[in-house]
Length: 71
Image 1 (cartoon, rainbow, N blue to C red):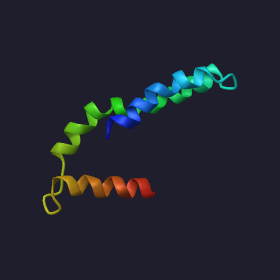
Image 2: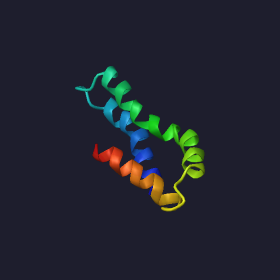
Image 3: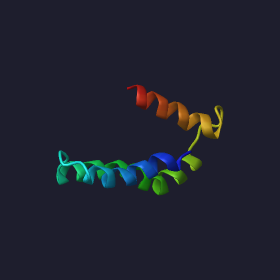
Image 4: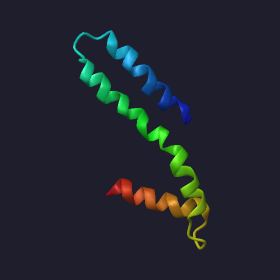
């Protein structure tokens, strides 16, 4: 399931090339969608090593991310 958005993000510039109303600049900006996926290599060890023992490994970073999304 995690690869579906990544696959769509990689396929979308190809789909946009067929549309005459989309400029090259718009396609370049849309290519930034895949940028967070490249940060997973940096983010994953940090998430695995830092946690609040009272809440557990997964819950402690998940709560932080949910509050960040809400803000």
